[in-house]
Amino acid sequence: MTRWFPDGMPQPMADNASIPWWQAAAEHRLLVQRCSDCSHPRLPAAPTCPSCRSDAAEWHEVSGRGELYTYTIVHRAIAAGQQLPFVIAVIALDGADGVRMISNLVETPLEDLRIGMRVEVAWEDMGPDLAIPRFRAVVGG
Image (tube, rainbow, N blue to C red; front, side, top):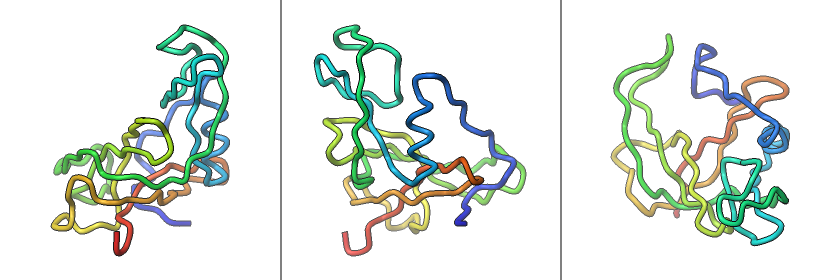
């Protein structure tokens, strides 16, 4: 079980719209929700489409690869035992029609960070039923 953040970190909250996303994440699968009527993608999941207001939705698995859209380096801990500094990143996901995901960039030296760098999902298992998608630089990418 790979861990980058301490147990004291706040746990994510699931709701009815996001439960399928969290279930897939526990299996190390990254999903994006799409409107069944207009195909508008959305992440995080929502009960209605922000584009056409339909409540019809489907889930599509994406590769977990993408590029670093932007980031910030955090120098103050939010949980006891947290390693500093750490990176909060916005990832533009491949195959997700412009969807960007906020996560953490791990296993990547700060001096190597650059906008547009290729990244891939790295799952952090928080327990048997909870995995959090983090990202790391693609070696040679």
